[in-house]
Image 1: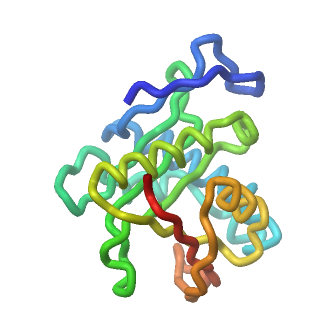
Image 2: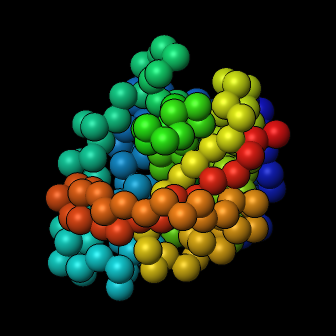
Amino acid sequence: MASSIGHHGGMGSSSSGVRLRRAEPNDNDAVATVHVRSWQAAYRGLLPDDYLEALEASDRASRYTFGDVGSVAPVTTVAVDGQVICGFATTGPCRDSDASDAGEVLGIYVDPDWWDQGVGRMLIRDARDRMAAQGFPDAVLRVLVGNERAKRFYRLDGWIPDGQRRDEVVHGMTVDELRYRRPLP
């Protein structure tokens, strides 16, 4: 993947811009750091502070299986500025029985230092294109109830709530999630 954008400042600024590439096994620690920092910023006020503060990138890094291949293996793309991973998106077949023909954005996170820089838009566009290339006619994703920033982001990208809601245990916490859906190109 050779997508790139210019970066307009921020702590990770680079004249080379941001590019996307497939995650590799040695990306685990950097992706885990983005994942934790994003959760700590985005879910503040939605999940208990003590839970968010206790999150450790080292606990998450071992859960990733970058480099696995196969038709059902999730695929993760990372956004990179120079050597710094500033975001990632993971897609795969939908896990919901009522949407088994759809693709799913299993996770999309951008380091808070990179919010509002276009990294999330790059990642979601790439995720949509990847799922469409796999033959999925549409895609779903989950949004934590109360996460207004994420809802706005997805609405701007054409995602709409489809009425499906669930409680899910995520890393030991029960969260209420709404499912969003959109057709793929």
